[in-house]
Length: 465
Image (cartoon, rainbow, N blue to C red; front, top):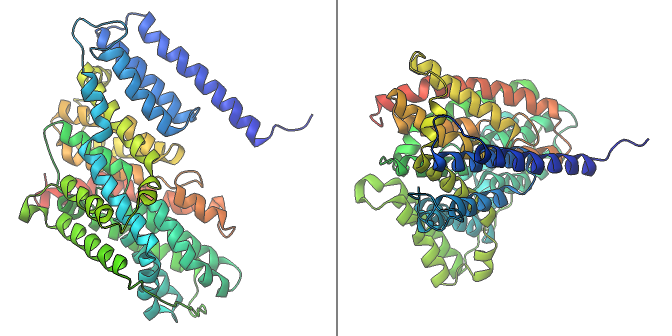
């Protein structure tokens, strides 16, 4: 009998996922769950469906996000098919998650990222930065990692990884066969994933954390997020560079780069440069002018479209599935809070006797472990609402908890399937699963310790919480 193909195994997993989702959806509705009122039982059913579908990917992640929104309208709002005595949320509030200010923030970030690719600014900038280090492999590796992480602060890490591999391919071609090529190929996903922790627009988990913090009456500015996370990013980048340069590059590794640059000097390109620079400056100077980062994020959308620097085709090409996924996560978090499910879930365990530092380390480790198997967005969708409720219940600052969980989710990069940058690196044929696993475990374990210990301390030192 021929072994099952990959497609058949995926089909079985999806079938099992759909069946399990249906069963777990029915159980809380058919049984009396102790300690939960009808609204909480309905939200538990939705939450269990979300867990199963996010884990098994029986349907696409963005489809699961849309399902979450629809189920909340049909089960918890004034439009519920079977009415509650008192609706937990209004249909308007649920649908508003699709236009949450965080979605607008991401929309602006995505449009800037796509504009950088359209006018080839990202590749030309990378070539410009790498040119001074073309004769020294280890220093070129460091410059490549810093450039990748820098771009990932304002672009999606997937787009950054794809861009930087386009720059890196000529480098791989001139390197001798063997581990040197592997070291350079590994540097891209490592730096792209780490760059994803540095700003609120760098990755979906960050956006979800900002939205969850805001929904509880607190806020964290664009600059404050960077002040908290960029030092951690730099520490992990330095550790990653030391590991890769010592493990894969010997002194005197030959390197001869052809990094030609041809910056676009058209009027449209200059308008894009000015708008992107203005947006970033306004994001970084939020404490001075007081304009929220979400409002600033809408600036490039309006100006770039109004000046036709970016077109309707560019708008259609944005990463809308990611925005829908974030919107679904926002709706899930709001529903968990509004229905009282968060308090019930946290109350299942007696957390009062657990030291605060041990608790932070535990939830950071849980987020990291789950993100290696699920997407970091799915993990953040599930853990951040519960983590913030847990923080409230034990008197822990919700801002530090939200940032901690978002960062820990982005550290999950052990497997080729853990993040898109890992998959892109694996697809080059120069990286094996074992290479990713060793690097991912090393950076992940150190990162979790730093997130659980350094991040709360550092934020307190600089007065962020």
